[in-house]
Every structure is written in C-alpha cells, then in structure tokens.
Image (tube, rainbow, N blue to C red; front, side, top):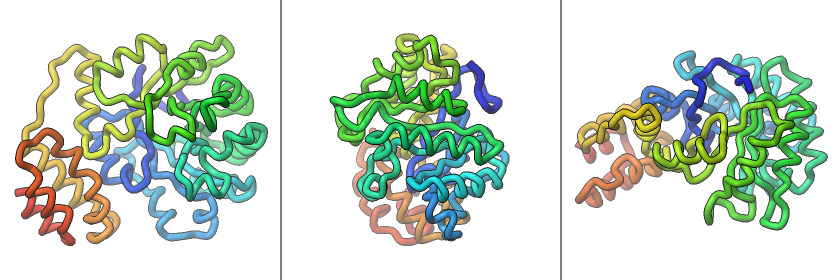
Length: 315
C-alpha cells in the first residue's frame, strides 16, 4: 500500500464538504493536524463553462499540501475536460465524487447516482485516469440502497482501471446521513487480498478513541473526518494526541473564539465579507459546543451581516 502523495503512515483527512471545506477552513484544519485536505466539490459542467465560483474553489496554496481537487459530473467529455482543468492547477491529486447524495446532484446522474450504473461509473473513471497525468482517487458510498451494496466489487473494478486511492463513506445513498455507518464493508474492502491501493474510511468518526478503535478493527490506511470537523478544527489535534498517547488540550471559550475569528477573517478575505459571514453560520454550533450560556451570543451571530458584528458578538 503506497499513497499517491507524501503523507504520514496513517493520515487524517478533512472531507470535502460544500460551503465548509473552503481554503480558510482547510488551512485552519491543517494547523490543527489535518494531514490531507480536499477542495469543495467542483461541478465539471460549471468548470468547463469557466464559472468564476467554480474556478475559485480550486485555489489553494502550498501550505495546504497534500491537496486534492474534487470534481463531479456524469458526462464523459465534460468530466475529462474538468479533470484536465483541475490538473492544470497542480494539486497533488484529483478526486472524483461518486458519493454525494443530495438531490440536485443525484438528479443529474452525478454523485451517488452513478451507483445505479456501475459499468458507467467504471468507464467514466477509466477515462479520467487516462486524461490526466496526476493521480486519480475516488470517494464513494457502499451502494445506492440497503439491498444493493456492491462496494467490494466496485473497489476492485476502480482499482483495475487505475485509481490510486479509494475513500468510502459507510452509508448507502438512501441513508443520506441518517442511521449508523456500516464499517464492516469498508473492512471487507480493505482486507480483500486483491486490493493494494490505500483505503480511507469515513463515517461517524467523532473522537480519537473511535478512530483508534476503527483503525484496529477494520485495518484502514487512513480516516476522513467530515461533519465532526464542522466548526471543530480541534478534532484533528485531539485524534493525533489520542493516537500518540498524549493528553489533549481542552480549548476554552477565549481560545475557541480567537480561532473562529481568524477563520471568519480569512474567509472574508478570500471570498468576500457577505458570503463568509453567511457560510460561517453553520460553523458556530461546532466551535462553541458545550459552552454554557452561549445562546444569546449565537442569536447575535446568526443575525450579523458584517465581520465586525460577528467579532463584537464573540468578544
């Protein structure tokens, strides 16, 4: 098992999440120990039409490496062209999203919709692998629904057409984000003697203790942290400390507020004040989870329209 980029023996990934894993949040997560970060997913159709928002999603700096750009789509020509555009930005790898469950993506035949047509999934992936010189990786789910979880076969077939890493979310599309992630099938993929590429497990990981337990139980080569990282970049340090046997620092309100303000300022500088202020609203519950008497401040934050108003509310 060899990663297609330089990283640690057991890397912790920040999952690609729309309007969450932008450059400002990726850099903060890196500062707290995230080993590998990936862009928000980029529409192949928007990318080939040169839509400015999609172009901006690919921007990164060297402090974020190893860094991947994630693309999604359903048409072979646009997907390959988008992969070429993404590769031209010189990331460390290009990731194909075959797992997004949201309706607006699935209704176009992209994301996890492809799990209903495995031959097409394989042929599209093979075309992207041939189209670009960079490593191609895939993120997907167990299957479309409970009665159809072909991930063991899918993993073999994707490896056979040349992908160099596979990340698996332990749910079906029909589950969306509900219920419990099924890691047994992730373990089956990893322990399949035919597999030789890195297998990254994703789903329900919210503590260092759970990461350590799942690493031991299922043998994955790394893990990907998604929803548990929203507003909680500290989780990467917590995981790293637990795995190394260190006692992890508990961040108080003032420390959390300072990190949150830096996140907001960086986001405003990168994407503009109003988008940054609006998108930060989904992060506050994570940043200040467990902080007593935070409700009044949160109400002010949710109503704020400027960075200064947010800072005043936090301080």
